[in-house]
Image (tube, rainbow over all chains, first blue to last red):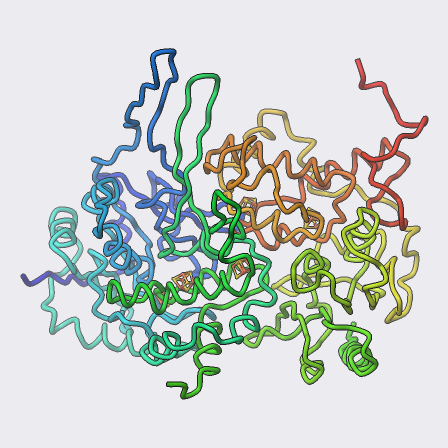
Length: 353
Length: 286
Ligand code: SF4
Ligand code: SF4
Ligand code: SF4
Ligand code: SF4
Ligand code: SF4
């Protein structure tokens, strides 16, 4: 299937966004306390579709909520009645504006685990019903390294509609999926000129090249995958995690982390069971009922984090469980960088066979 | 304020004399002009140490980890940090004889934008109150400065109740329940905290506004009369929530009602909630 490309200007893009907002539930970065989180918006003025990279949280909570009700229950003398919770409007068609490319990509990575042994139907529904509009970044931030990983940032198909600020000052919109094509077709009629992919290509390429040249961080992920796999027992993990305060925030803000815990909120005999985020950097994470904890110390937990992202997930699903967004590093109170951790540990591995 | 050279020399000397196993200080983060904490165990690495107005994180936090427990530790403390250290000592969390404390006469630290941090502008005790050795010249008036009620809570107090309630509702709504605040606070040393989601019997781990409200209120009350306004918690919060509003409100109520108590300034002084005085007001007891 071939998809359409449009060329327009800033005003045309604005009109497009407004038309989208009028037709569907829209989520976009909203600023609160200096940080942008994806929230439901009714007007373009409420949000910033090109919010600053370092201040924007991920879109993951729109698919894997920070807290989801799993079930409700009532304890009676005859037993416990369990009922479904049906508050989440899973069937609503919605659009996300202002997702970064790394964020969009994280969903492709998560799809693998959500389609694995247990099929998470809530996640699937949310995926199916959501169209993602993503503007390609113009410049990488300090901790970004998306272009170093195992996905093609330029031709990313994890997003449905691509927006590019062309080097010529024009705005290009390109459908990347059938969902994106449908949205563009139904909302974008006036003010925009349909162009062929070939006509748009040179300007879009120029923008990409300038963007790709702006990265401070570069890594060879294949080397990292290969080296990490061999050095489970290196003492280097202790060095890189020494100043970690086990605060968990890295996992909470990461678009690809997907561990959760279960807890109950109970009043008398009635309760709700919740599923909420958890983090492998947490001291309790592997604490077992009998009291044994196989990862009682920080470096073992950090090793798990690094290995899960660059070895185990890769081996099992063929993808790195990291999209190079840098959110963990920005939010970390002591700026521990996953990029530095895996680079430093693999460097320490040297040529170990 | 630059004590890089002095701190490197002190650490090198302590290692050479065999007096410490680990030195807790700051190093450059390796990508911009900001710094991160570093725990040095190899004397070769003392050249990594730096100290300037970018040395923000309160290092006393590391005294609650396995990396320093039962070890002899060299540590750098600014005014606020030293107050939290005093509390750790009073509350029997660390042994004084295991520590070599480098105290700083602090001229204030700056945030990422290079602005002096608000807690530094308001600081009553810039000179470290516990140390084996001091660096810098005493900041004039340290310890005798007049108490300034935090400008943000003053401004908020002027707003009508409904507006204040709406504001805090928004704060709790934006909390993602990561607990980074609790973990980065030096005084939250409890191995099991009632707000930790894993052991939560009081509050569940859910990220609901009500769970966040209960958890953060409990947390701030456990720090009432103990919080030293170092702002580790606020710097750690991924949602940039104004956590100092909770702590500064508690601080000012305690300062005004309980003989101008300020946490951790006097060694061995127990927190406001641990001691009883006949002068304590009781007009709020019905
Ligand atoms: S580990 Fe860090 S850089 Fe990688 S996806 Fe998660 S938050 Fe982004
Ligand atoms: S990693 Fe950075 S540059 Fe790459 S898509 Fe994400 S925000 Fe943009
Ligand atoms: S955010 Fe930083 S300090 Fe917190 S657990 Fe992650 S690496 Fe450790
Ligand atoms: S509550 Fe925050 S400001 Fe107060 S001592 Fe703890 S980390 Fe510092
Ligand atoms: S650090 Fe911020 S977001 Fe995390 S639990 Fe504390 S207040 Fe909430």
